[in-house]
Image (cartoon, rainbow, N blue to C red; front, side, top):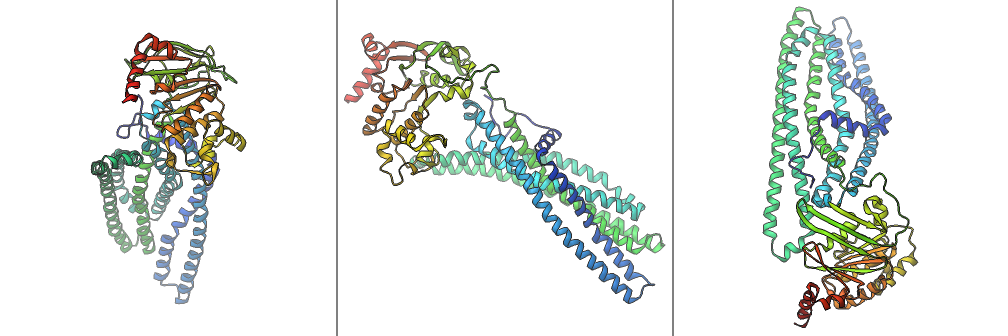
Length: 596
């Protein structure tokens, strides 16, 4: 089973490939990004002014020909000009920031949507293979890291690179000789940067993986906190969390250490360059081959040359994190969905409800057959029950009908058409599923029944609830159908949640209905309502029932008895009792348990 592994990626991507895909998302906002680039170039040119003005100021103050009044006037002019330029730059920087943020949010919204839609389209088996917390990390945390790339990292990288380029040009203009000395340090700088890039990338992947593991642990254990408290497992869970938290801490510390070595190394090179400049610069000034104002400019430009390089370390930090997050996002987007519509799949406007299993074999894992040569036919409008011990394959049969999984051998047909030839959306639209573990979303009772589909009227919702006896408890609530549902429907009993799921199914008018242990763990009073609902629903369309309580399936038109993946018996309740086979034994066991 293909799954998302946070410690070892299924697929790694080269930086060039990642950047190419990320730039693809930028196409819709390319005009905004081009305009931002123009603003950035202007801002970089403004950043060069202070060093130039300081040098000119030193030159005029050092001048022996200019009068004191001329020096004062020139100083005021320089300072005033610089103040105006800085004010304009601040305003330009504001517009540039807003432009980037809006563009970045549009891009990130697109990526987040694509990731969510991709997860929605994955097969149930693929989703079940990955903890929910890790999937949530992909859609939220990892996408946010990519947002930083568009709104902060890329523009700063461009700004710092342009700064380095422009400063280097100014340094050559001022003194090619001293610039040549400075260039001797560049090879060492490049080697350090390349080593940092290689080592840090691996560490950033580990950090993102640790974050994902912590989120997955929290998601699972917060949902299961009730069980943890019932069994007094808080100390054990605390230790487990501490271990994952410690792993995240250690990986984060290693990340900081890598960065902590790189930046001081760059600073050492900067100091070496400053010494070179001062030593050679003073010698040239004394020799008369370099003006003092140009030495000041060169000295200041050298600071501007190395400062962006040090800042690039910060950007490399975020760039590596963004690339690591991008890898994890692309890992999902590139994942091949196991169940897809075939090219010639058809749309069904209506189905009668005939279901055929023709020598079906199925295994979740290769070689471990769950269903073995299963063959049966269910006629339209029939009610058929599947019974048998746990693991016999009952629920698996229901999952195969809606193509949650693909069979390895045989064929499944609905109305004579292979389910693989029917579009998934069309197939599932005609099938209603009512499961033992009813999932209710945050919202209102009405929104849960309609699944937020506004095509249903209030009258239709009320009618569906009355049909399945759900209106009995809904109308007693303060706000009725607008009553707020807590997370997972925790403010309702199991029976009430089940009745709501019945209403949800009936409202969508399926032609085939599936009940998988829908009457398990229900109190006696609610069971009476559910049994009455079931009798009504049997008239709606073909109904498939899986139930351990044989009292639930006694009125079925056909009962299929499964044992270890094979069909052992088929017939009505009375026929199977008369055979005194496996079904009879199951019935006897339940009957004796009820007597006891």
